[in-house]
Image 1 (cartoon, rainbow, N blue to C red):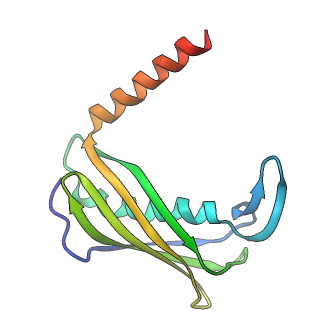
Image 2 (cartoon, helix red, strand yellow; image 1 turned 135 degrees about the vertical axis):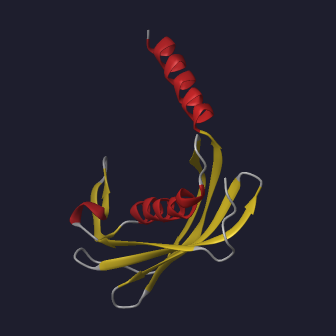
Image 3 (cartoon, rainbow, N blue to C red; image 1 turned 90 degrees about the vertical axis):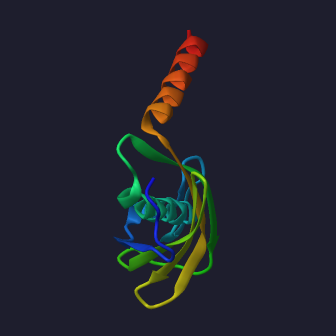
Length: 139
């Protein structure tokens, strides 16, 4: 991985849809607002955008941690901007600070992500190993 400049920032702009509201499989619809688990997903996506320009050939990244504090709401139809800022790099671990703001300017969330940069071959081998173990388990 090439060096990521201090303070490197990426954004993810999205439109909250009805599918992104709080709906649990077993419990059904709960609140008609942007769900915390979607916020976590968008934090991870924005954090990934930090590493993509700096990966070298044959490298990939894999998420290892997401921390989210959901502070305010966004309604379906509202635009949300998620901002990821490089926090630090420790070896192959990339730490980012994230924030999300709705189009009214409300700070709807903040948190962190951690990604690990590894040879893509190693990532693929780990998934292949898991698939093989699963296949053995289900026989």
